Length: 349
Ligand SMILES: Nc1ncnc2c1ncn2[C@@H]1O[C@H](COP(=O)(O)OP(=O)(O)O)[C@@H](O)[C@H]1O
Ligand SMILES: [Mg+2]
Image (cartoon, rainbow, N blue to C red; front, side, top):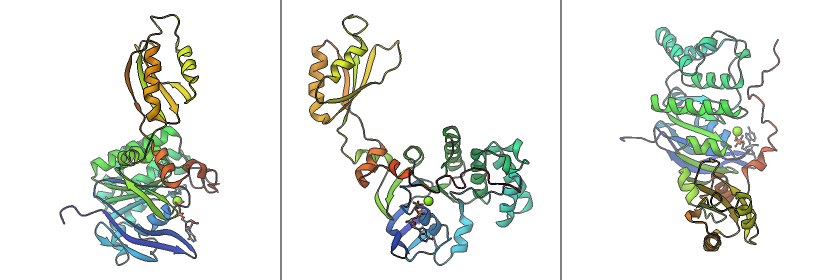
């Protein structure tokens, strides 16, 4: 094969008593791409990563990682993959450099190569000047970066990450995203991640499998997913700003008059540039297709020139609700273990 799939999964099933944590799923991940498994707590994401990284055996079905059958050769699979688990597992009582060194030895990376690789990775993750401090003194974001470097110490072809930014602040999350994009590009990595964050899946993934109750509900590119569902609730319109020429109009009166229309549920202003000659509005309606001609007529009747009008594309959140019948956010309240291992330093001593 010229470009074998990095991961192939066929009829994979993992049964825990009466629960099918992974319930007869199928997919392929092309080498060099980023694949995301997006779903709520309990969807089976961690179970799937554990199976693919050779930590647990499936009840039935088959999977190949880098062309290797995981059931037949789990040890061989482990040499080709890096794993960053959800709970942070770097040793708090060791320095960052020592943590990397232990892993490199575990994978039998030779001394010279070990030293060079650790040096480069520490630079890449921006921890060179903290490398000899204890991990206990690191922030959650620093620790997460160290764990990514550790996962890459033996130059794996595929990196598995389970909820890579759970519990991190927005700034640290962005740093992790950039790091993953850079490593993917520079090391020709395939990335397989799980997440329950829409923005993360949208930003990083070429393909997203929406998973729920052990099943792949739908699988496509982020764009493909958004195009696959009807979105008929939000009209975006750009009009020429009349309010500067005509004293009877202000932005407030425009929004208020539009809101008076019975089919309009909410109007919000999009353009914030004061110098702009345009006004961008987002208008929530119950039926966009029928609302557009009415809105056009109304605005033109008031003397506003319309520059653009159309339906807003669905978000990944809309896609999730469409296919699963509920919002992923509602599930978060039930996450009992949400912050365990997520960078909160454990009691020392
Ligand atoms: N070792 C186990 N024993 C029994 N049930 C398990 C075990 N691991 C996971 N499960 C169950 O399998 C389902 C999927 O869990 P998990 O893979 O952790 O989901 P996610 O990572 O998407 O939150 C859940 O219902 C969970 O309770
Ligand atoms: Mg999980």
